[in-house]
Length: 273
Image (cartoon, rainbow, N blue to C red; front, side, top):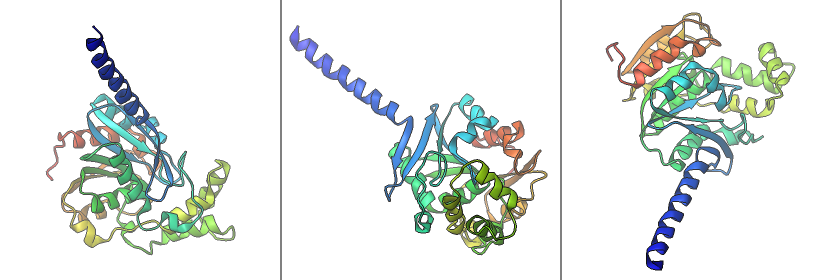
């Protein structure tokens, strides 16, 4: 009898430990390449989809968008993270902490930590800028949805990026007063956000032209914040463009955005690639 019980206890204990490990990985903190802690959350099961939030955002913002629940309802595993400098993640106050694709390295490291190999991703606004770096640097990303972004981020001297950086660093800088006020009112880390803009990566037109993944580019029909999304589509060989109702702030929260993204990720997209 004892010979039977002991192996069963070993197996049962192993199952508990395995379940505990999985539970711990559903949410928590990942220590990145430079020890910066990145907060993340995983929901659902099935094919993994990484959601990348925009400037002054956080991973949980996606929960207020129809695309989040739609992904779960359609059988996807959804991974969200607070990019460094945002949300519950660490907020270094050195510009070099955001340089050299640090945010992209964080996400690649997180996915490896979670045991995820092949995956798809959705980015919005600045999240699409980071997504572009993933498409260039990570061979494991198979498909992507880039929302709320045009082609201007290909310019390393993008005036909008520099303008926001200066507005957050120097109170005397002109422009972006509403953004600066919103950041201060919300109690966000202005210095960390400034350094994100200072070291924000650009992806060259030449790099975009070499991408092999299928990419859906979505933009609101009233969104002109980040230049022309149609121009961006022209730079990426296996990409298509769709327009949904809304401006830069509202388009990502529409049921149309969710429907287009889900259709694309599920290989039901009708437009010719």
